[in-house]
Amino acid sequence: MSAIALHGMTWSHPRGYDPMVACAKLWKEKTGVDVTWDKRSLQDFESFPVDELARNYDMIVIDHPHVGVIVAQNSLAPLDVPGHEADLAALAAASVGPSFASYTYHGRQWALPIDAAAQVQAFRPDLIPGPARTFDAVMALAGEGKVLLPLRNPHALMVFYTLAANLGTPCATDGPRDLIDIAAGTGVFDLMAALYRRLDPACLAMDPIAVEERMSEAGSTFACAPLTYGYVSYALDGFRLNRLAFADIPAAGDGGPRGSAVGGTGIAVSAHAKERQAAIDFAYWIAGAAVQQGPYAAAGGQPGHAAAWDDDAVNAATGGFYRNTRATLEAGWLRPRHHGYMEFQEQASARLSRALEKGEDGGRVVADLNTAYRESFR
Image (tube, rainbow, N blue to C red):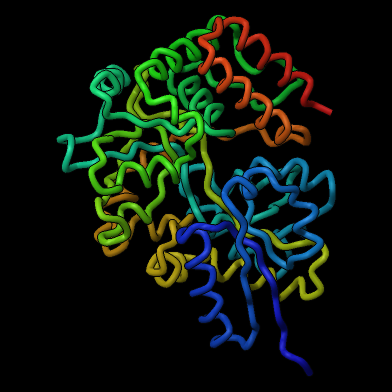
């Protein structure tokens, strides 16, 4: 009998790739099952058709907004299966914020969280005494030329989402209806535009990795990224010349660090996998507490399990990355996930970026977002 071999696809960053390879080696030692991983760029990760990947891989690392189209196309195998009931309940109970729930759709579980993330704040503790606690403080730092903000697609929309929810006017997650009230949305856009006018226009071409790379490079004077997806790699001693610290998002409203647009990743199993049960078993193992808290975190991963986020050693190695951003994750906001959403996300973020660059009227921009959102429902 030939040994079982599984092939997976993840994303091309040490945080996304290194822990998958390290854990695959341990799994082979434990079970004899060979798991190999390919990787794709962050931009591909956020936009590449999952259905195409599912036809070529047994397992895929996904982000939750793809769930609607995945279900419509029957691309993935549900993971709430006999034999793993207790494991599934344990993962649900140990979710960091809504990470587990983000992969629950139409009553089934389509992925298991292995990486928890939301927009948080990155800062240079050697350049400023601490994180910005309010958006007014962010504006002051921006006026001094010390702020970067990722605005490359889809991140302009993520900033809009986070600010809207933080101000107490979260965007819609169902429909068809308007994404946001015109007056509230205009206020959000105007706040973004006021900040953008104090930023390097290069932010329009920057994703969170580019921002955190720029902040940590030699001679950088950029001290704060108030809304950026946290990458634990940059909190590790020696990863880059200058180590970043991470904190909760600054408050634009009066509700504290609430409303951050949740990101992170989950491990999913292809509906076309020939060794489906073997793939499901690996998914549960790598998402579990022992692996997430141990080898997954040790290999530079950013775990999705609360056991790792609470662990003293995991926090010590990362300058308190997990404890210092936990409140933001727990109060995070989930994006829409319906079939048709991914096209809206791309279109809406491009619309926001273009409007920021050209200094357009906020009311017109929000009206366009509302129209596009209503039309995204199929």
